[in-house]
Image (cartoon, rainbow, N blue to C red):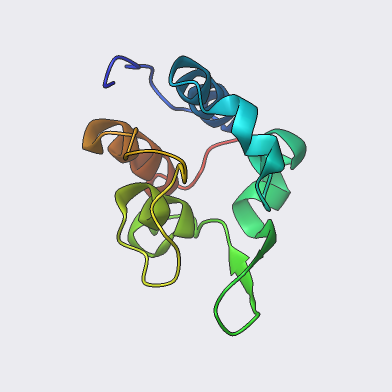
Amino acid sequence: MGENNMAINSFKDVQDFINQFLNANGDMPDVPTSPHKDFWNSLTYTQFTQGNIPGVTDNKNNPVRILIPHNSAMSTLIQVLNGTSTVFDQMPADGPPFFDKTQVKELADWIDAGCQE
């Protein structure tokens, strides 16, 4: 599962990384039926890096930021992939943690570097 060793240097790389990973693990057919759908494909760079997860609220019904540039540890995207969120279950939802720590670190490094467009 740690076969995807692409460098993530742009939002397009993030989209490709997530799509390739979900397709390789057979999870992509289920994503469009989830509350958030495949939001990384439908949002602009600015919406993705500054906005909230579409269709998702926290346990107090507040919108949830996707990520915080320069702060992967506090970014919901990284927390749900690592299984460290106190609000949401680990993603992808319908199986074991498919993303390994190396893959999550690639996304985290992109966030910590400021989310290059």
